[in-house]
Image (tube, rainbow, N blue to C red; front, side, top):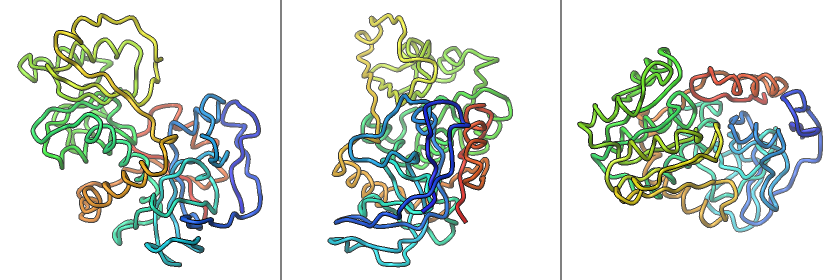
Length: 326
């Protein structure tokens, strides 16, 4: 099979096309002939040498892929040869063949291409796990996602609108703000021009926001605490501006805030299987009806993976970046 190798930690130029043996599925696994692979920020961090794969996972980067099942291992009953699926992965997605746990695969809806489906698993499962399961967002509560034009952000806006909540977001340009509003955000704030804390406190009549999903970190950590409503929940899933900051914890106590966070990649297989089943039951109907759609900024041939990483690192994209293997 062909796959993307990280020759050494470094910039995008260390990503090289390589060839190796095609794996065979073990018990509970399927082998997917990959049509498209999603690109995620975690892939960049792995390429830089700061996010090694968990024990037992493939060293090949890539946390989601879509294609056709061409082999199944023992004890797999859900899937058959020829089924079109997208899959959550602990690694290995940057390849034209990949092993996936059968219970972490989702069927590709008829209306979507494999290219579109490759943009779904990581973002949908991450948002559902952190915002609904971990933070317990309820119908009618307010929700803020930082980085609304990212893959996570565009997914969160659509998904949480279906839950029935007002959705706010921060972005880095007027173009991104306009796009997020068209996607369903009630308020989209260009943080380069406005103070999002002031804007959203005014928008909520001083009450603040119930659930905040943050991928930025840095000085956003304290600002999220100031903006959170009483009994609010703040979930961190990345720290693009750093994980360390000086904070006044008094508002956390006075407002009974919950500060939490998680990563999905290293979670045990049983957790990811249960999460996939929950998303299939509760979220997949929205995907099948076109109410939650993948937003694709660019698709590039896998040989241009370095350029895909450069696009993501420039942070000017809207939605997901996808590699194709046809």
